[in-house]
Image (cartoon, rainbow, N blue to C red; front, top):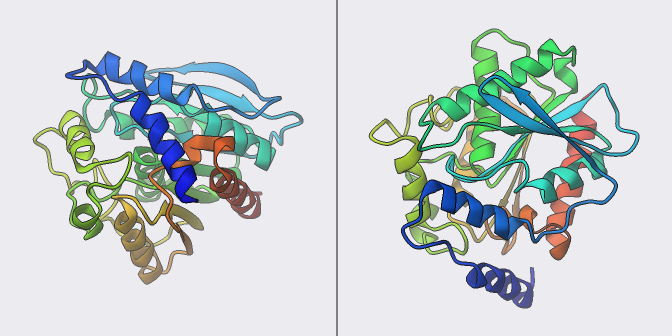
Length: 295
């Protein structure tokens, strides 16, 4: 990403700063409004889905492969975000892969603190299995908090004796909630996601709970027996060491993992879609990985 592109992205963010002393509803409306400016892929169909405490959205490309799918968990610190806010990502993943995407709308904090989001995302995976999809044809994917949820869902499936998905994809995953990694100090003023925001997310979702508990993060879990995993993270973001560390732990446990650190990229740059060349490159690479590891 060029200096000019970064400045343009930061200018967009600066023109719509988060509200002062907001309610959760105001924060969610602000986030939706910002991401609503990003173009989504054309020719994509969207269909609402309601199931129990969680809901979602089917994102279907033309002539989609009905045997495989991507389950997508949006980011937003467990506080905001929705299938609508992440359509720029889910629609392009559907377009590039030719697969339907189930974008999960899990319950949000503080109204629904931990482990509500984790429970909903695991329930969504079980529901998809009940619909007759072969586990090997399922990709679990997510950005930021959603990356946490994707990995957590796979590990919970393993621990509860469920068949594992075909692959996992994490984009800028939020895993080190306790902030033990060096980048949580050295890059705490990186663009878009700051230490202050991370602390807010932890307060509303985890509260006084244990930030290292497997109920809220898979970061300290046994990483053995996982399916092929792809991680994309930016070099200029607070959470870069989350990805580097978890990839190292996966390799040590014998689980196949590919880590790509994108030079100068900021947190969840995929949300900028066609506005940023590296965003499209990342999503195309993710689609290719999913196609290669599901079937």
